[in-house]
Image (cartoon, rainbow, N blue to C red; front, top):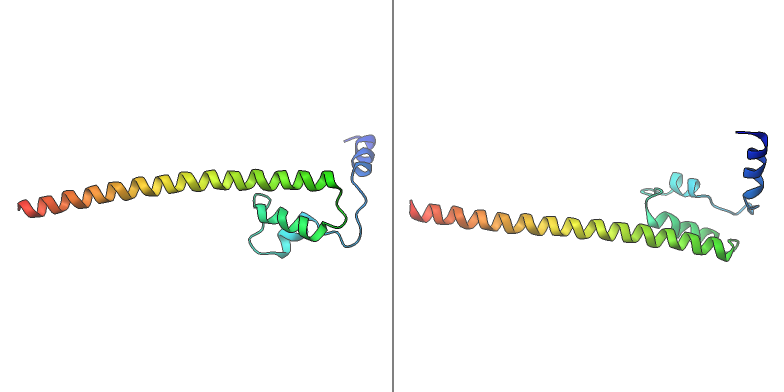
Length: 103
């Protein structure tokens, strides 16, 4: 990384007040928080709401919605799998009962 890249990186970062709580602090101090958890970003908004720009808030809210949708999709797939497995078990149970009845 060149000196100019470092300078640009530092100057691109907004100046934060001392009360700013970073994502890293949230992840390290609150159990079960991670970068793929929408609650992490909701806490980030909660702690920093007073000093975040509207554009930043919109970006964080988009991340929250994206992660919530991903979790919802995963849960739907899990439910479908569980329902398929339940139906298969019910069929097997019925077959076992039929076999027992015929013996």
